[in-house]
Image (cartoon, rainbow, N blue to C red):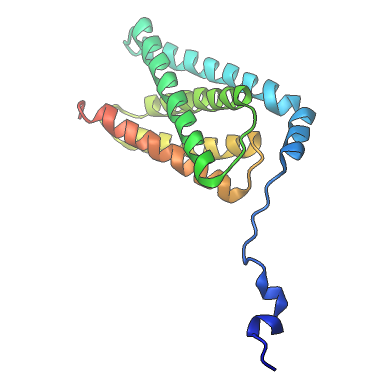
Length: 185
């Protein structure tokens, strides 16, 4: 009777929270089966984002902005969004050991997410008066929800991984917003 308590309850020896990931072979099989999700859907989302940007630029031009200036601002916003999203995905990958898949597909999906996210953010901000903060606040909420839906759709992640990845990316976006707009306000 000199045994330990753990001997009496062998089921408690296992970890409380086990974290299962797909093996690399399983992940490769999933990617092979879904050309739609890996390539066609991101390309379609980029097209929808481009249409949303054209709409936003045309609305801005009608309100007195120059088309060239608005297009330049759109390109700068897209580039910043893509860089911040890729950095957030890289950090998320390292912190939580997430396999996002092959690099070309990850870049395409991040570009698609960024293009649509920045286009919807620009459209949301343009709806509200320029002197109020309602537009950027609502745009941030729209982008967070969009990023969550797209990351959950694009990548083989569970809810916790998806939420943490979007939180990391959102933190980078908020920091960039504060840095970019600090001199202006």
